[in-house]
Structure formats: C-alpha cells, structure tokens
Amino acid sequence: MDGRSAMKGVFFMEHILISLALSLVAGLLMSRLAKKIGLPAVTAYLISGLLLGPFVIGRLGIEGIGFLTLDEVSGFDIITKTALGFIAFAIGNEFRLTDLKKMGKQAIIVGIFQAVITTIVVDVALVALHMIAPSVISVSSAITLGSIAAATAPAATLMVVKQYKAEGPLTKLLLMVVAIDDAVGLILFSVSFGIANALEQGTISVTSVVVEPILEILLSLVLGVVAGLLLNQVERLFHSNSKRMSLAAAFVLLVVGVSMIEFEVGGVNCGFSLLLVCMITGTVFCNVNEASEDVMDRVDSWTAPLNVLFFVLSGAELNLSILSNPLVLLIGIVYIIFRSLGKISGAYISCKATSCAPSITKHLGITLLPQAGVALGMALTAANLSDGPVVRNVVLFSVLVYELIGPTLTKMALLAAGEIRPEGRKDSRNVNEGGNQIEQVRKDK
Image 1 (tube, rainbow, N blue to C red):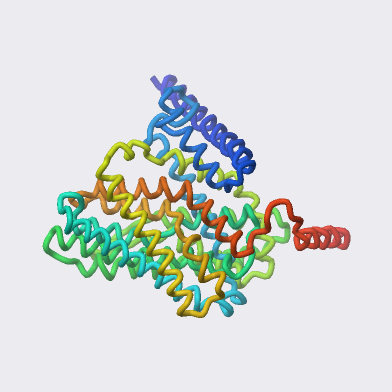
Image 2: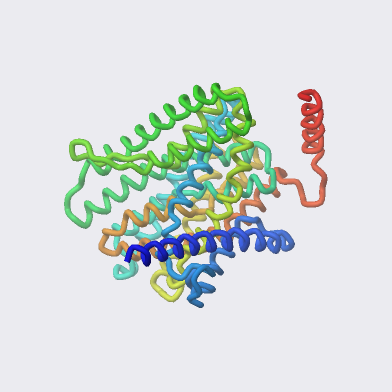
C-alpha cells in the first residue's frame, strides 16, 4: 500500500513539473507571436494560460498537458502568491525618497481620490440597476461590487512597464498610485462589505467595518518596516552580488509566508496584506541600502520565469463558463463600463486638482484599468452574501476582459505620453548605460 502511495506521489510530482514546464514554454512562445502583432507579453501569457486551461486544451483530459480543472489550477496558488510578493517588492523600489519628494503628495491624493470616485460611480450605477430591476442584483451586492471596482492589478502594469522600459513622470506616478490602491481598496472594501452584511443581517459590526481593516494595514506596515530593516542589516554581512540577491529572495519568500498567517486576538480577526507587506519591505530596503538598486535588478532577473508562470496560471483561472450566464453578462457590462468611467474620470479630476502635467492628466486613467488577483480575493470574501456567487462571477467576467485588454491599453497610454520609445528606434540612453557598464567592468578588473 505504501509502495502504491509512493508511486502516486512520484507521478503527481512529475505531473506538476511537466505542467509548469509546458506553461512556461507556451507562455514564452505565445509572447513571440504577440510581439509580431504589437501586443504586450502579459496579454500573451494570459492567452496561453486560457488555452491551456480547463475550457480549451484541458478538456482533452490528458494528464500533464493543460489544466484539467479549475481546482487543479488553484493547486498552484503558492506560485501566484509568491510571484505577487516579488512584484510588490519590486514596486517598493519606486518609493525612493527622491521620488516621494517630487510626486509623493500627488500620488497619495490621486491614489485615494480615483479609488473613491470609482467606488461611488459603480455604486450609483449598480444601485440604479437594482431600482430598475430588483431581481437582477441586491443593494448589498451592488455596494460590494462598487468597492471591489477600486482595486487595480499591479502585476500587469509593472510587467508592461518593464517590457517596454517605460520611463517618465507618468510611469513614476502610475506605479505609486497602483501601490497605494491596495491599502485604499482594502479600506473601501471592508467598509462596504460591512455595510452590505448589515443590510442583510440587520446588524452592523464596528469591529469588522473599522477595526479589522485598520489593524490589517497597521500590522502590514510594521511587518514590512521590520523586514526591510532586517534585510538591510543581514545583507551587509555579504559582499557577493549573487549572495545578496539570494538573501533578498529569501526575505521575500519569508515575508510572503508570514503574510499568510491569520490569528484572532480578543475576538478580533488579525492578518496581513501580502501586497502591502512586500511593498513596504522593498520601500524600506531601497531607501536605507546603498546597493539596493543592483540587488533589485538581480532579483528582478531571477524572478522573470516566476512572473511568466504567474500570468499563465492567471489566464488558466479565467472561467469561460460565466459567459453563458446572461445575468452575469448584463451586470458585468454595467460594471465594466462604469468602473472604466470611474477610473478615467477619477484620475482626471484628481490629477487636475494636484496640477499634474497634461500628459499625466490625460493618460493616467487608462493605465489603471487592469484588474485581477486583489479583486478576486475580495469577491471570494463576499461569497457569504445572499447572491455572493453573482458578485464573484461578475468580477471573474471583468477580470477576463480587463486582463486581456488592459495591458494593451496601458501600453498605448504610455506610448501616447511619450514614455515608451516606438519599436525600431534605438535608445541612446541604454546604449550609453551599456557602455558605462562595460567601462566599469574594465575598472573592476
């Protein structure tokens, strides 16, 4: 019996490795095709995941070739969480004091107000839909979806920025705003979901609406600061670049693991925001460590395959069966239209109020449309509402749409703002940097 169990275990491990290898190869091959037609690599990875998923190749039922079920894709959750941790850690690099002095105030104001305006716009639209057709969506689900609309996916945005080497004030502000979105979205969702529960149950919990979300943010900030300072101290013990990179990777893995811990103190549920913790860790480390720029570059190159797998698995998780539900399509279309309107108008209004440059004011809203993991996590939390499955399916539908077109829209906006060089043009800055690097190597020798 033990022998059979061992054989099953070996086969299971082989299946996992084969699936991951094919996912990585498929994503990379699809990115080559996408490059020929001008699509971002992120979109290619998502499409390859969609093809390998349980609704296309997975339907063939061949072990190791494609994902047979959504549960099988969920089994790789540790990979997606780890990739998100590294992505958030990299975003922390954008919060250097030199950048915060220039754009910190604008980022905070824009980050908060565009999220709040988006929530209000979607709330109004979906509540109006409830008043027109009460059987379509409940008020509690409407206001919950409104808060979920505030969330923006940092992963897709960062990947587009890296692929096209986008650089400029819009890119700087975008990465800051996307990072701030996590904290703002968490508060908006906690308050809205608390109100939604109160509407359905007749009672409101101050603990769940106010205390728990604030505590989660504070605990995440403390953990991130401690981890960043500790990483800086331990990193000073090593002089090899490869060991420094390995140490930084180890700390991100450690922080991701600790961020998954949930506990209860005096009846209050306590936990951490994975994205916020990793982002603060990266921010603190980059501001106190002189060699952080080099370390971050090396960690970024080390995690490249992990990021590809993250998006392929994200694509495989997209549930195509929801497209057969007319109710979900109706609510989803309303949600997508008014969320897009909220993001674009909210960014425009807040940019105008903070005197941002015209190119930022005009293009920032478009770059904030991608939506993925954070929104899906919120939708999963909302499952205990009376029509919680509707909320989840609407978010799944919006993620399907936004993840496929969002990266392309982000690329177009950055290109229009002049922060991505048109393909075919030589980047003299990169050429000079390359020459400087060669000269530095010669000096080191």
